[in-house]
Length: 528
Image (tube, rainbow, N blue to C red; front, side):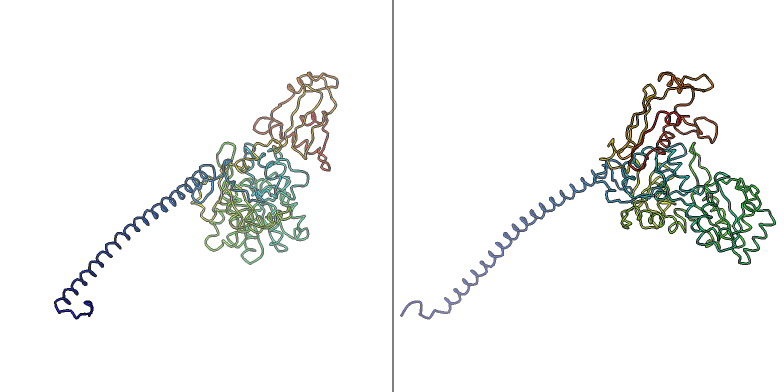
């Protein structure tokens, strides 16, 4: 029989079982050791991979952060919730803007003249896109604003004010036409030139029959004021209407022919208080608290007087105050929504996220944009700086810029063809040279017109040489400033001659083909 098939003794069986157990235990220990070694190595390898991945991710994030930091440093830096825009921003943060709503005072011009870069901004941006100039002025309409723009270097073509200018005065007139019932008593406190009651002409044109039914006064004696107060208390329609940028002037009373209140005296405040405290409504143009001045000292704005009357009506009469300008309770409908309608007529497609309102005040310009759902930009060239944002939580500015000059994309900033029109004279030569942008006045030479040099009285006759003409012009008047006829002919009450000349030539341009010939005689006439 084969040895392997022989039955084993009990001792042999025990020894064999012990050996097998030992072998299995050793194998298990070895397997655990190998598992530990292999697992540890895998863990180390995995850890190295994870570390490398983390390092790569950190590198990418660091690179992204560095790129973002570089972009921020390049000009689109976050300032709290603002984006600060300057000419080195890359990518350009305003590239998707299709239309503009532009404030004027403090944004395009100031009491001392045009804001630097405003004419270039108009030439490079605005004249290529739908735009509306929005002014909170309470003393003039679109024609008056167009004239002021012209004096500050921005020339709008004839009739273009109807497409591109809307003022708080116009908005207020529309609100009055929509709101006041027939036979209303209306006490008007107005500013502006005494003989230039724009609001009166505007209302007559809007609602002639309704206007003729209103009982309008610009001055009230004590008895009449008390009688109107009693009428207001009895529920009859009585209104106090403020057409003013702050100051008021003696508008002629349409009923009596007397001069109206010429200043904010105790008397006018008292009689206004009689009416308002007994139920009359206050309709104001705007709530600009103050206006800038030539010496940087703030001048009282209409908002100061609105605040005074608002305090009188507190706590129950706030619903009787109606402000029609930017930032006011009625301003959204009568100011901004109307301006958006003007943009649509110019080709804007209706996407409000592609409209930018630009202005120098949080409480009017930026607030108006925020209420209307358009994008907002504060320029620091006027009243407010972006550091004041915490005081105007309801008026967040998405963008902040030093001035409108910073809103010109870099690639258009130095393009000579986009510069605004300039007019140059060379009185030593028998011609007038005009440098113009494309599509405007073209350079055209003109025949010489000579005049004899004058004596000290400024008289002149034909026949002098060009050199004599030049000497006559230098001696006959101020070649730098042109007198406006509104005060003494000094630096403070005159405008730069170049602006007067721009306006002069604009009127002589032929709009049909964009060409015009300006004669030397016309040039001399413009310089008188």
